[in-house]
Length: 191
Ligand SMILES: N[C@@H](CCC(=O)N[C@@H](CS)C(=O)NCC(=O)O)C(=O)O
Image (cartoon, rainbow, N blue to C red):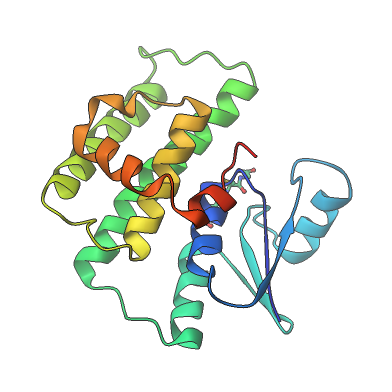
């Protein structure tokens, strides 16, 4: 049986839970920052990040690679290059905001005069503006993998209050459209 290791709060994990909604799998919910679960994480994945997939002893890490693995295994439609780029946009802002969350938890004050914060802030704003444009152009009208990843990103940003996404009307309309889906509710990070 497919085993997906992760946490209920990670947007990188949630996208795979949503992808696997109609496929038999076991979800292992971990507390990755300490204790026995951190040891388990270390034993499976030296990058010390979630998600990981275990398919009968074949362990795959990184959501992007797990998606490729599952695409082959489940015979999913291959992403177009444009969709791959969209995924890169989503991943880049997701990564920047994971760093922002870890900084916040480490009591590091975001000082916009410092290069690292200025670059990250600029990236986050530029990518959200591009995603807003893509959403307005109907790029996320199908509930496919890029749309799933966008939903997980937006819902997590709202949950963690990491960036003001309320200013993007098409992204907010997209979020509202999917927020009441059974699988969205079943994987809500607030639960
Ligand atoms: N590129 C990775 C990113 C995964 C990632 O950043 N996961 C976060 C949780 S949302 C994590 O494990 N962070 C732990 C850390 O940074 O120490 C993927 O797509 O799977």
